[in-house]
Image 1 (cartoon, rainbow, N blue to C red):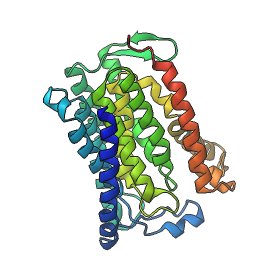
Image 2: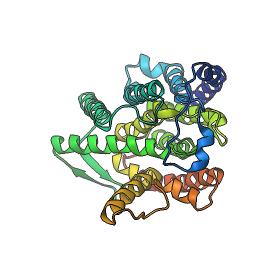
Image 3: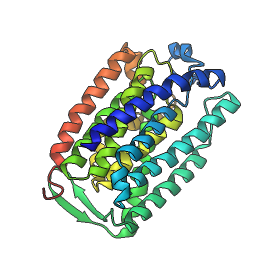
Image 4: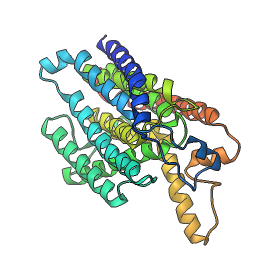
Length: 328
């Protein structure tokens, strides 16, 4: 049961790194700048250390090596490919975080810069996974147990769109204490269960490491947060969420288990379009959706519990939808 070892290693490393990293970030004055157009009470969070995602990134990497050593020796690098894919997004996020800290603002890289870097990472990962034989252009339709073949070019365009969209959706969800962490833990457990069910021990190890690292991070990130994951952490998590889905060849499960991410993005899009079409009126009290509920009186703790609970239920549903993807 190497995935149990993976969870324990990731949890332990993240918990220990957190004790060292948070004081270091404070000394470096790596404090988060809060959006002025966000809820006014969020200004109290100004200066809370950011880039805390480093702690679970290091923890997951350590667990992949320790618990996945036999996989590596046997020539199976699939879990490392997914981790490195997510790590690229984490590095993009770290550059963005550094830019924000350098300019003491809430904006780092431009939207175009982020998009091009993320698109390049998505295309490179798709080509690599195809070359290694881990990916097929056959889309599995959850619940119907059928596959829909696509030309490779069309599939790569689809994959790039889904990957970039997922990464930014997870990033957008990271708007209140613990939310992205709490929502992603059930998703990680879902991937762990699916990987174990399909006999993919390599991906079970990676998924368990993700769950363990986030569980430890939640100790520091739960309201009131002592540290934020920053774009370093949220973009990395987005890479893990979509990377695991594609490595398991079940990308269409993302809108099911990651419905919270999808709704967060849609709420933002709806707000912008409605605002422009109505010349200043708002569809939501504030976007994305978690801020709408905040403005309606929901506490950050309630939002964490409800959104995480909904995701857990959706993950159970998602498992039923893809459990027959491969013959057992």
